[in-house]
Image (cartoon, rainbow, N blue to C red; front, side, top):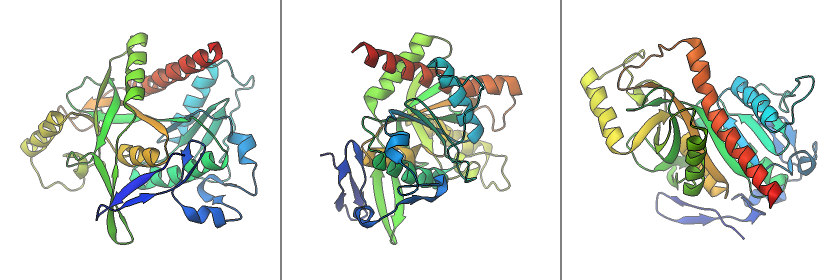
Length: 316
């Protein structure tokens, strides 16, 4: 049976148990008569989670509710599962925190902006998949990012998530002590997604490290925030160091996403399009239509991957 593990500040390993291929590391769940997934407006007593979600094989998550509904409509068309009335109900309509849609074996969930928001969503998503007794699930974060040394519109498949000091781990304070978690992603999955991008040949796709920061402005060396204590030269020096460390894009969710998926035994990837080259500026100057085209690229790539996998499973 798979086991999840982590290390706290003293290097002590903590292990947990799994059911199927979804791993949880919380023994208290077994004693709960009802597990309420509050931010999804779902629960183990109020909903038949295995019946609703037991067939899920792919989960795609992204920041905005609008983007995830857009992905739902796109993947429904790609898989031939379109609703004739164009209606795709939000499963989490009873809450305003997150949005969730389901098309066949594909679940689409919004996660908001930043580590705290996606962390809350992932806790409940992982428990949802666990309670639904899902197996062999692949989770992909699709989103936007700032690029480093890349042409705007380039899609980056993350090799490894690093923090703002280029360290390949996530440090979280639990009970007043630092807990360090690996941010490794599935290397084979990343290569498969890169190959899909090459097969499509519609836009440039690369593999690189992704820097995950705690904010949008100072943490990403922007010069246009309300506060700034550094120069343009300082910014450029930092971005050059990041590039030398293998970083090709910057966003705010990949580290906790990678860490939690690894703990849960979930095959995971991060696929983000770059909206600009941060070495050439901080603000978006592309037109609305161009930005919309860029934002569709991760959806097209991941949609192609899902379709390819489903077609292969039908033949086998």
